[in-house]
Length: 384
Image (cartoon, rainbow, N blue to C red; front, side, top):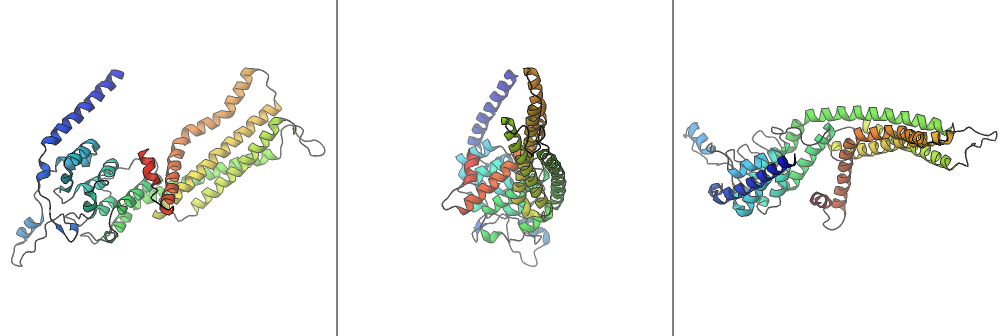
């Protein structure tokens, strides 16, 4: 296995060296691009013909010849960050290349959801002009962020997170553009916002059904946990004296039992309230951007803590009632007590982690927008 990994690593290094040599000899960036008009890089030729000009001649003047895409656009489309970065570093003017559909590098990278390449290109000085590009179909880069033609499900595991990723992607692209482009109409008289909602209706319905089913299931589990810990609070281990005082009150583990029981009841009821608030929300596009992922993360957190507290309560009860003297018996008891917690973590932690990260990013984004100064917490996390 080590030899195979070493060979693959050497192959990657050789590929990078070969790519650098090819970039040095590449002359595709010499191809002229369309002129800039009205502070907008027009990606299609607009020549007005006289009324007597035939339709075929007008079409020939409007459409570009079907030449193949340049190496830069191909690398952008396939998401090869190293080649894109190498070409733009050596030949910055290559960023103004235009493909056969009148699309520049930003159109291509956004259309194909190449997130890493987008992070490289958007920091280039040339991106300030490229964001104004309009292709042969009258589409801006924001239209391509809304289009799902090349969308293959994203990188997130659940429908809710997939929709949030698309909303975040659309918002990131929108932040790169001048505000007067937001209401731009393409040749089908459609704005980018309307195109986004039309293309993501099915994903929204899938996300709504998933959120409802998940919230209902988690609410049921939380109510069950609340019922168990509420009953345990009135059936103290060892029973009560005639004056109502617990018999094992002076035992150190009894205080631990009480604390875990109260914590389990409080956290389970809190998770129920959170999941009910999710079920009663409108579940529209705006809700999936920040609020729903944050609430789901909180609900999963409190549910996990309630299950953990319940098992701690069970363990304390066993140790109070049965005084284990043999080490192997105590070990088995501890293993049995922690088994449900370990299984819960094993199956739910990946999902919880995704929502926790989404919630943290939402909070940091809020702080970045409201704190004085240029505090870009999200960029700091991405760099880290």
